[in-house]
Length: 386
Ligand SMILES: *Cc1c(COP(=O)(O)O)cnc(C)c1O
Image (cartoon, rainbow, N blue to C red):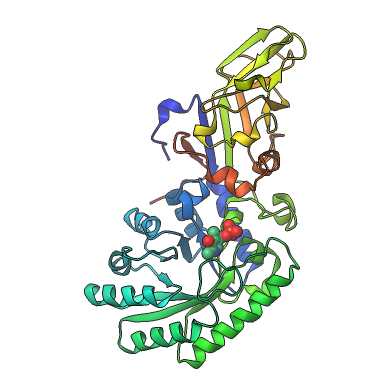
């Protein structure tokens, strides 16, 4: 697929390998063979481009797609997606009616949401499809156990009126990236209880779902009817405790690269970049990499993150600026225009998003998701079609 900023490719680009993404979806399906798979494509597909990634995930057997915001789900419908699609992050006054009219499954964590859903469904003249979210221990979104019977009863009443159908009961883990953490078993027990309460109230949800990537990969008893992997669809391990991409059979999908903008000799003792956080130890060659924090690189990667240039790993010399950073090429020969790989699958010796995460004190999720719109996405592999 053509990226819309073709003129910018020489500076920097994020190659998105859709074959790798399809392989990951198939691999994840094999981890959860009895469940359906919802590919999570929120936040523009974790920075990879929601629409092409969604299409590729569908081709590889994702029967559901998931987004955080309703706007993200509506955008997928406008791009032609017709399959089951759910979004979960609602605020009062949200586009409930449009979501219902576009056949998007919505989520309710409280009675305020059910009330807005019922009103919107009446206006739309058709029932909404609603997943009730329980807080089984994450303490973020979701309904507390004490309030759950009331939410369930309100949903059942609205269902009896024909305003909605409860298609799902669901929740989300706090600590699944730490396999064996006692919160995981406690959350599953709380979820089973929430499902039992819903069933006793007369609800018959089509799908019960609790598993994110780490739970899909490590906790089969959490799979229920549907798993919701996100980061692993993009070929990244959720945490070192869960494994490496390689050990899990995942293929990183994004490769971020740039062209050197300048290569120059400088004398020893020369300060480099803002604040002179790096000083050349002797006469050397500096390479200018025209990518910075406006492209989504963490400024915390200053002086820390690796790149592959002229066949070697080099650490960022000094600060990451808005649009550029510098590497000390240590006298190696390189020229303006040479390719620098910031991160990728690691198969050609380049660093990975995980290496960047470690260097910047964050997680690989954040490394790929923050790559900004200024960096054109270039899709490789079999095109995802329409
Ligand atoms: C982001 C998200 C996921 C996917 O999580 P990963 O750890 O990326 O697999 C699943 N469910 C919900 C509710 C989420 O917000």
